[in-house]
Length: 170
Image (cartoon, rainbow, N blue to C red):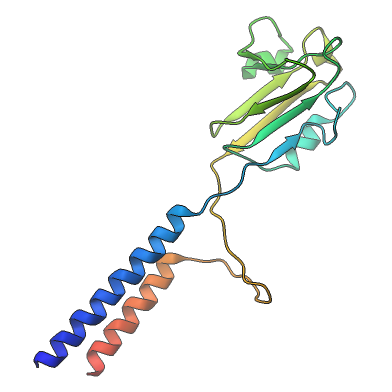
């Protein structure tokens, strides 16, 4: 009887250690920030570019950066609220991104950011809305193996069932 109690304690200890290792490995994983070239090119903050189409094909996450490339003597980049974005109103902006014509903006929150070109260029299509999500978990893939969606909850349930079966078997 005492031998089976030691075996149960050992199995339960191992189960706790495995669960802690799984949880700690997920807490450490992170995603590297991505630099998104607004409009898709080096100097594409300009009229007659479909920024709505461009942004719909991108995935933006907290920590990513936007790169605006443009001629600062002609164009500018203003962060605005939704109403100003929809009405091309550039007077009461949140932040003037414009510095030197090769400017970056850090996406620090999960929300929709709105940008427009002032000086009337918003009416020529120079505006973009960027929907930013929380950073997704990073999945590690082993070369040569097909990857499947990973669920730590399912893994823990399987380990618990295995430990229970082992205990009952003895």
